[in-house]
Amino acid sequence: MTAETQIKDTVTTNDVVLFMKGTKSMPQCGFSSRVAGVLNFMGVEFTDVNVLADEGIRQGIKDYSDWPTVPQLYVKGEFVGGCDIITEMTMSGELDTLFAENDVAYDKDAAEKIREANL
Image (cartoon, rainbow, N blue to C red):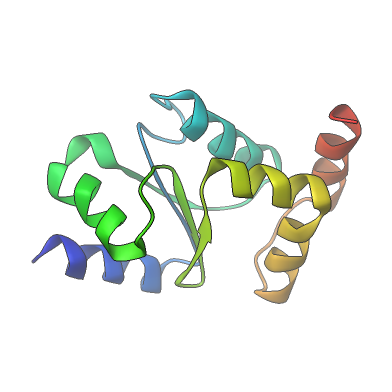
């Protein structure tokens, strides 16, 4: 299976996927840690893919999305963005809307707490 086929299969068979350095329980960079932390705090069930474990996936995800950096968040097969975009969407409430529109369960109170803590 090629990296592209594996990536496509992963993003289309899982509702929420985070391609990251490390894992959701052990992030290996600050940007991955921030996005995984937001998702974990909001109680979002997501699949994590450690790009450090497979060089083909590490480069393949950048080619697949035409986005040069990791982490990368996908919701229902669609690329959402990296750390800065996810942070902005969390703070504006757009991430809540995206999850709600795609029937992805999340803790709305936790999302509000993130925004309150960052005013």
